[in-house]
Image (cartoon, rainbow, N blue to C red; front, top):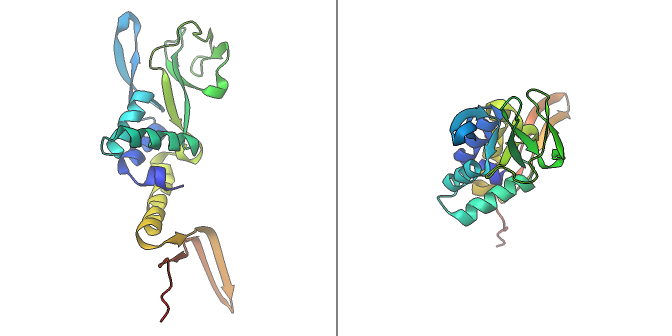
Length: 189
């Protein structure tokens, strides 16, 4: 699972900016004006731009990358909608979209804009452990290291968390261990 996000520092930074609510998002205001605010979600255009940077400008690879992040539940897809009462833009997951929505900021209810959903309102948000700040409390570093070990050094690997060895009065403990095979084929003489 490390591949889709650990291969690129751009993706890691993008995920962490969302988790830290430091991602600048452009939102619409009245009178067709727009402003930038820091949010915990990314409009589809920003997510696509981050994937394009991570994939050297290759649109097809960026699309595959974004779909993989959603499929692996690293990102969740939803809509960014503005509450008519408090005028705050908030993210609503697909599973929460109903005819009447509750604003997470002011708790006011407003109808889903069924007739004309806002243009470009699709957005993404980090999910699960990826929503933790500080590069998921260091987990991204571990994932990048695993990717490196698996992709560049070993051919087959697995990881073990909280491993304890108690052999003949020699206790040792490891919080993370990665046994791997260094060669794919054995050489017979």
